[in-house]
Length: 101
Image (cartoon, rainbow, N blue to C red; front, side, top):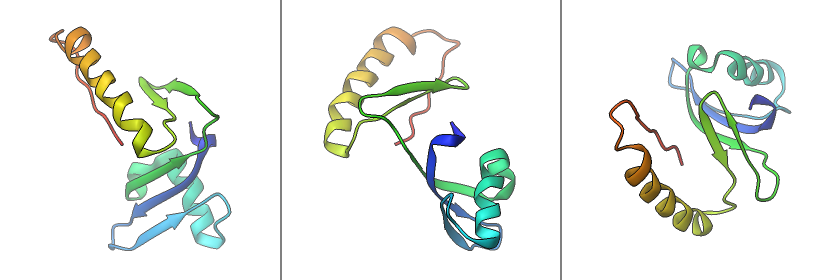
C-alpha cells in the first residue's frame, strides 16, 4: 500500500501541519518515508492520496481500497456498499466496519 501513496498530510505533536510527497526535500522527505513505516508514531495523518489505476481495487491488511475517481462517482458506489454491508455483513455480531473517505 505504501508504494501507492503520492501525498500525505500529517499533524505533528507540536501542531505543525506538513504536506508530504515522495519528492519532499530534507527532513520532510525523511518524514514521508518514516510515516509509511510508522505513521502513528510520527503524528496524526489527516489525509492520504493514493495512485490508482483506472477502475482498480486492492486489499491490504483487511482493508479494501477502491478508486472512485471523484466524489460524484463515489456517492452511488458508497450507497450500494453501505446497503450491502447493512444487509449482509454487519448483521453478524462479530463484524465491525470503518469507512474512510
